[in-house]
Length: 219
Image (tube, rainbow, N blue to C red):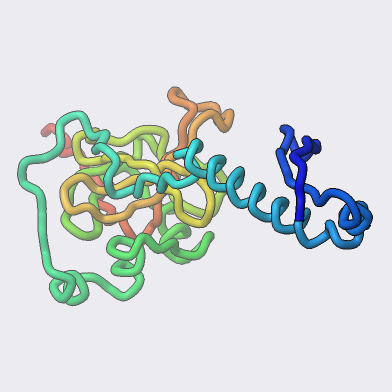
């Protein structure tokens, strides 16, 4: 069967196809018989362009950086870091303390620890896991959020922060730099009338309060 080469528009360019001559040309002009060929070329074109789009956009294939790989923001991390096995932590901590400090859990708001926190006077707040000095009563304030709040740490080298991307949001996690225990989160720019306009929202069970010794009266 004789054929002749013609040009026909398809997609973004011109395709060169062979069509029959003479008595076979009538069958070529039947649009129904062209459907399988058009479908084939359409699917092939879609596959090619789809692969090119994916390969030319590497950001689609990139994975988010896990929070544990972010740099420690404590300027001078303590040299006497505390490392314990999971079994040792479970033995030393209460179930609620373990859930917060070692599993990055969150205590319920307005719980017993928060009610106790509001009654405490002058003193220092240390890590419930290792005893490192973290916050001072001089920096605490009532944010009405249901958890203990501080506007600054008492000993910056014992407090570190890192990015937290859990639950589909980006927050700043606060940890004890000495033992790595989860303390809470840091929020900035909320408009509280404090010197720093930042709020260290800390779990009460992650802290241990050490009252300030009474001042001895001079004789």
